[in-house]
Image 1: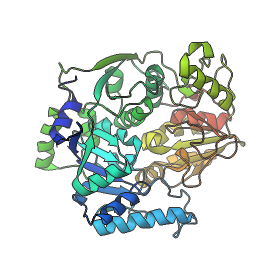
Image 2 (image 1 turned 90 degrees about the vertical axis):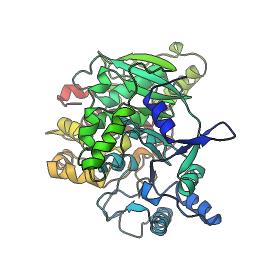
Image 3 (image 1 turned 90 degrees about the horizontal axis):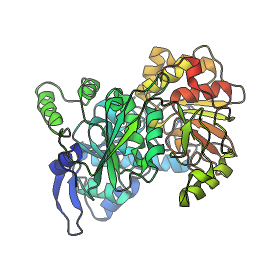
Image 4 (image 1 turned 45 degrees about the horizontal axis):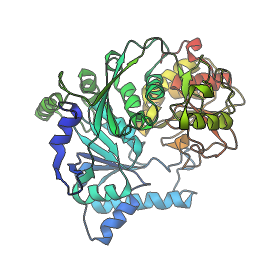
Amino acid sequence: MSSGTLYDKVWERHKVGELPNGEDQLFVGLHLMHEVTSPQAFGMLRERDLDVAFPERTFATTDHIIPTTPEERERPFADEQAETMLQALERNTEEAGIEFFDLDSGKQGIAHVVGPELGLTQPGQTIVCGDSHTSTHGAFGAVAMGIGTSQIRDVLATGCIAAEKMDVRRVEVTGELGDGVGAKDLILHIIGELGVDGGVGHVYEYAGEAIERLDMEGRLAVCNMSIEGGARAGYINPDQTTYEYLRGREYAPEGEEWDRLMEYWESVASEPDAKYDDVVTVDADDLEPMVTWGVNPGQVVGVTEPVPGPDEFAGKDRDNAEKAYEHMGVEPGETMEGYDVDVAFLGTCTNGRVSDFREAAAVLEGETVDPDVRALAVPGSETVRKQCEAEGIAEVFEEAGFQWRRAGCSMCLAMNGDALEGDEVCASSSNRNFVGRQGSKDGRTVLMSPAMVAAAAVEGEIADARAFGGDA
């Protein structure tokens, strides 16, 4: 059993007690909310005539269903179901006294982009949201988990959830990322090495020199995809990179409160002699830009590496590979380089931040999107959009031929009408390539970094972004 890790310390600081079923009652420091998974929870509270216990600890935004063109964002939405969900969120947050980053706030965006950029996400917190990619916030040294609707009800009513403590696996990443290789490539490589089920029953502590060199937005991308590796959560111990990113943000503490919390933040970092349930080492040297070839994030290779053959798998992994070959139309032994794409999509809670758009813009500068490619750039928040427009990044995208959109989840899960059609192939900076994920059961998704999405958009096929000289 682990001891002395950040996970152990934060868990114990927030543990209220042990429940009869063996789970722990855990106090929640920050609750993020969106329009899709919260209406039913508020309905449950009304049935029991309960109030929200800690409205000041809950913040809401709208992301999953929100249209991403200015015309479609006019109210009421053309999609009646989307309009109904947003109206419910507006009503529920107003009645409960919960701060809501609505369309007119200038702060609307994906929950996992908004929380960090506003300084709501802080080290040593317990953070929950009705979304599996809540693991993103672990980049700050928080214990962050996705929860279901009944747990949202519990958080609203009591400020607590019932949770089972996981084992802790330290993922030690040695070596140095090369030019044109970034955080997205690294986490795809880690999932490829450990498997999509490798983290079941665990949380991941990412560490090592390659992790320490990442900036905060790179760390957010790594922790975001912990859930794709089966881990309940993923985190990185806070350090000066964390504090420098957080300082001065709107909801970050100031003055004496900053000093007081800094003492706490430093105290929860894993001890040098901390004990882990498991330790694995992953080498980042010689890593190249990664692309998925199948229908889960673990079916991944370097862009110049051959797609593995069925004999390289056993059991259900071989069955899954056979299904992936057929769905994707890929041949074992061939590389993904040169695989035709129809759509290029840049955005999401994985890669929808300013640094992601800077990375892609470095590839797009002076280039033109292939005429047969439909290219969408969707900022992760309105704050990101405005910053990209101020820096001239949006102009680079539009001059290259991308559609420059407003903030939302968009084609990550296609709940807002941004979707693949038929068997289109999408070069995507998102986090899931499951069959049907982007709105068409025949659609095909290839996960990759922002730079690789930009390169694919220009070439009309999967291409090595390093040939463009862009910085990952």
